[in-house]
Length: 467
Picture 1 (cartoon, helix red, strand yellow):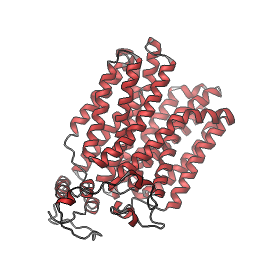
Picture 2 (cartoon, one colour):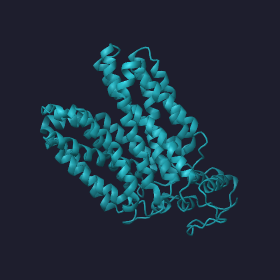
Picture 3 (tube, helix red, strand yellow):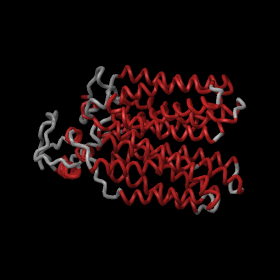
Picture 4 (spheres, helix red, strand yellow):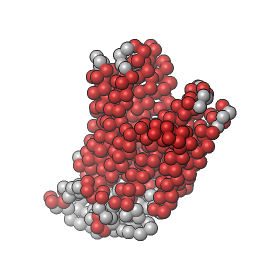
């Protein structure tokens, strides 16, 4: 094989088939167990207090270490995926989480459990970055919105089932049973996806054209593409001879994210990620507290919890049906606007039925914005540093979550519920306006057109690019 394989355009022109559905299942399983473990803290920590295994101070440290590990894992995933390859990072992150989850189930003391939780969270943070990136690199752009929605459904189910199983597992087998479920489940998923191929986009960016072509042919076969010669749009890259020197392409340093042609894409990714993470955390984590402060016990009712959990599934399910029709840019703007509106009116609902109904819609829109925000940011960057770009955005976003409780408490103390809601709604409004001005719809342009592979000095400028 002595010519450039043009992986991006060829992958985008493939029909959806068995390979893509299997990829979605295996990536979704990883996301499911990530979300499952990331949600079990509430029931697990409460159980530890009852049994005397932990204290309020140690519980707070447990949560802080979790946030820190997620941030470290996001940064680590970006570097590992771009340096060593997507396939290795894909498996390593899930194995790291699974092994340490089982170790956590046998922790003899709370300090040991906190240390193991930190290692687990690194795997969790890495998995979030890699799962969204794998959808970006393998799924054709015309179907990517649907598969991002499916990924969000897996995450929502992980959140829902974690709470549901906690009611059953913790009383019967203690909090250790929850870590066993997460660890065993993630290792089963790791075994099932051990044969996933390397990304042809990454192989091509590293000069490994023969390997990239072999993977594309495998995907074509599994996708039912029986054409003798796959037809693609004219490639902007001229055929080239592969030499030994080409086998290892030049490594692009992380500073490229802050170079003149890329910095605006980086800032847009940061705005999307910070908003979707902080907004989701503020809505689902703090709204019940606000209602309790106002004397409304309904926020602790089963109906309220059901609204929260079902919204996490309903929102991404809606994404799966409409995003590819509307386009990812328009969908992000729509869900950002709806999140701002419903976040603004939610605290003023007094009737229990309205609390549940409006809460359901709010959580659904916030979950949709979260899915599309985290799923779209990898598309802003070229293959050579795509995962580091997405990983950097998630790292900063998750560092922000470490400080978010103090920010929310300060807003609440200074201006009450209205102050918090105005801040959250304002974030959604600002990022929606930024997305409108940026004018990039990643569902209509190939990744290579939005974020060219090559020298970053050649990144096009203008209304069609965030560069």
